[in-house]
Image 1 (cartoon, one colour):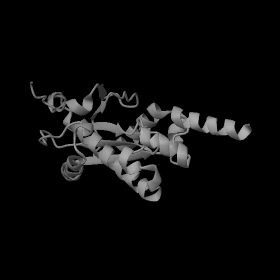
Image 2: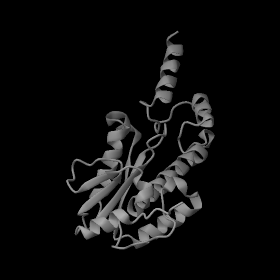
Image 3: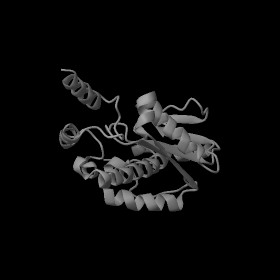
Length: 211
């Protein structure tokens, strides 16, 4: 199996004259609870970090190591957190895009080109969505790690406040354990009320109250 060169997009853009290439990705589209988090990263030209890939393919221990290394080595990085309330208001797709735009706005120097994990950014003419970008681009992979680790830490903090829900285990995703605990203990302010399992639970609860 041929090893993927996850610097090819950056190299090609460098050849075209782009110096500050930002990779952008998000974490937390699927969970019923907690925010969506996005990150943007600019690396020095020619940067390589062995083993860095899509955060979902890395162990938690490796993600944390890379998290610190990325922050240390990056020319600039930004991290943005968008609340469940905003997700409910504008939907998760738009909330993910908003999180990315906020993360990008934190970068200094400003990027002259942006590559994302499959998310179009109409606000930026010099941008390109790449399908499976977190596995194909080192810069997008770095953003995925920053976003994932940041979001996991938020869920660990929520677990300390509400240990009965098991957030440290499932991170808010709709696992069997999570759904059982949600039905047992109810809906917190951190839940996404427009997500079907949460909405169905609330509607069922209301029906019982109305009977």
